[in-house]
Length: 174
View (cartoon, helix red, strand yellow):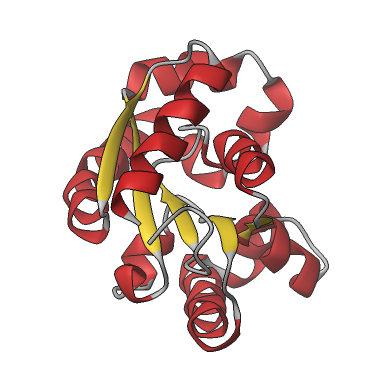
């Protein structure tokens, strides 16, 4: 199956791993539609994720992710989809939804990258307590690994090089 198949390409990983940025670039290179689960859920709820967490809690948000996972399975194909960091903890059948790429980033590098953009840091509810965020990061690593078809270590360098590596990997495996 080539990159031009109708199979979805899903990006998972901890927040700040580059899922949206890399996903957009892979979408552009492959001609597939790009979707970002967090932006879709914010649009559906007409409020930011931080506000959803504050008013309705994390479990409510995870239920929204489960619903979106069902939508992907039933009616979305030929797309590149960036999934929120906690999505794989809520939806356990990601490989049924497409080819799953785990963007693995070191916690401290991720924090350094996100810290360059104060707005990004503020809008991420799980980063408000860094000790707890590190615990969540560690607890999700095995989940990400088990849910993925391909793991790539992310080191913020040349985006084009990373995207080319991904597209080459996908063309050989998908």
